[in-house]
Image (cartoon, rainbow, N blue to C red):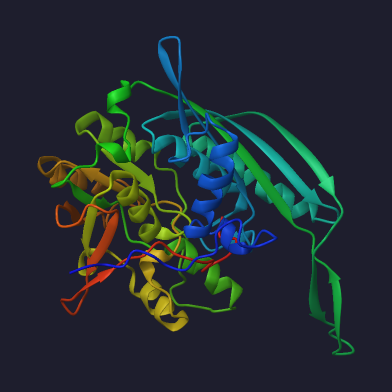
Length: 364
């Protein structure tokens, strides 16, 4: 069977302006990175969310990220804890041990001080739990550029009022004890490797969407936002992860496509083996979304040799958030063109494409 891997997607030069799709984690963002940023910055390690830099006898691991999630408070977390978890996890996926972080705040004039205090203390608590230290930062205040429509309780008329926001940039620094050949990377993926997901998927994206749509679910969908460094550190002690990637924007589908393209191999998963909470699946069906393409903030995809697969799952099961870790597929030899397919619940096989547009904007 011949698979068509082409999809008509907006490239970065096809529009005169930046679109939301350019920040989606999907095809448009990948083209922007590869065709603009990577060409301008030749030292950019663009295939990963963190860079490993050899300094004397140690490998230093550095990652930077910006957080613009809307809403800033959501079930299971907020923009503060999310900014810590996101950066900690990017360093961790490279086999690094996160140690220090910077935190820079861009505040719009009029932002409530009580909300800022709540977010700052959330960062403090999250960094303490992840065992990283906030060592420097920056604060800027800009004019408020956002508004919202509210209804006057007395007159029942609607009016437009300022809606100031907050944006956070964090940079993480850590170190790696791994030799260069041991650093997890797509190039080490090979036919026969098993594909593992560290827990049930889609929680973060659906937690955001439930708030945006005013849905009161019972029980509520909680974001999976969490640090992965302790879980991965235990893995590194007992097995050799060949490749790891946290499944954030674009979800598991985007991550698998990125790795398949880098490795130039065919990845096949079994949809029935992918753990999805019933509330997440139900809301995704209502919204017409595939859980494989929904963002996570505390889940990662892992590739290991077949003999390490069961042991890896057992290790993940010992940690909070890893209780539903599962082997979901393997690397096969049928096609070597960066292909991802899934066996469906009906027994057929479908191609999992890289997400083309912005499914859920501003989820991190």
